[in-house]
Image (tube, rainbow, N blue to C red):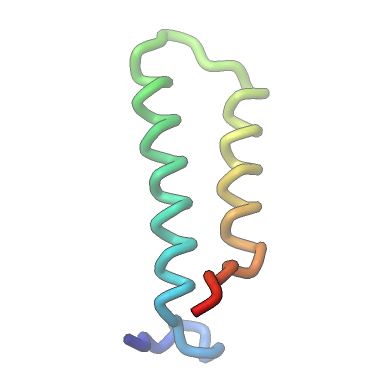
Length: 65
């Protein structure tokens, strides 16, 4: 499955979708934890953002066939 990117870059592939799914899982987990608390430190928010950025910027690894 290929989807055209909005910026005119290379089309998205299944591996891109897997990376996005991983990033969304990290976000969902962190949001669930943060919603139970009244205060969240800026360090924790920065860690979450760095985790998401790392997932989105590193090339997806594919399993050998």
